[in-house]
Length: 195
Image (cartoon, rainbow, N blue to C red; front, top):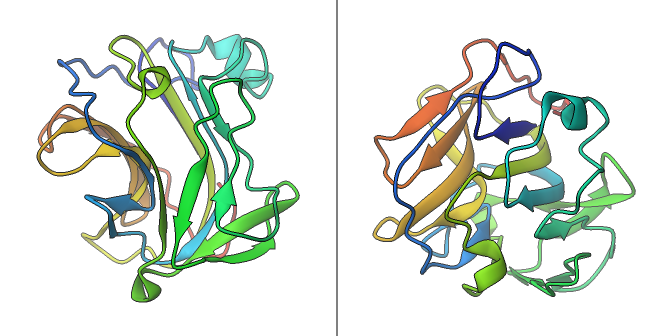
C-alpha cells in the first residue's frame, strides 16, 4: 500500500495534504503514543522518502532514489527490524511480534491484543518537513467498520507529524492533525490479502 503526498491525474498517485509538521515524536509501526493500534495482520517492507515520488517511480516499484528509512522485516527473528538505509533508524519491536512469511521474505505479524508494536526514537532523517512518500505492504486480519489501525508514522496524539493507517477497508494518510487526512474511496481492502 502506497500513499504519496502530491497528486496528479495519474492513477498511481495519492492526494495532496499540506500543513506544518511537528517532528518531535518517535516513528512508530502499528502504534500511536506507544499504544498498539493495529488490529492484527502482517506488515512488510515499510519505506519513507523525503520527497514525493513520481508516477513513473511508483510504477517501477519506487526503487530509484533511496528512501530515508526502509525496514524490510527480513530478519525473521528477534526484537529489532534493521533500517537498510545509511540512517540506521532501527526499529525496536515491543512484546515480540511473530515472524512469518511476508510479501517479500519475512514480515511481522502484529496482534493488538498482545500490545505488539515497533518504534524508532525521533531523529533528523525521519523528521521531514516537506514532501514525503510513505509505503508499506500490509495484509489485514480485520477491516472492522469505523476502526482506525495505524500502520506507520510519527504520531503520538499530541505531537502529530504524519501517519499512514487503515480505516475499515480503506487507507488514510494524516498530516499534522487528526482532522487533516485523505482517504482512499475504493480500496475495499479484504482480509488475508497483501496490499
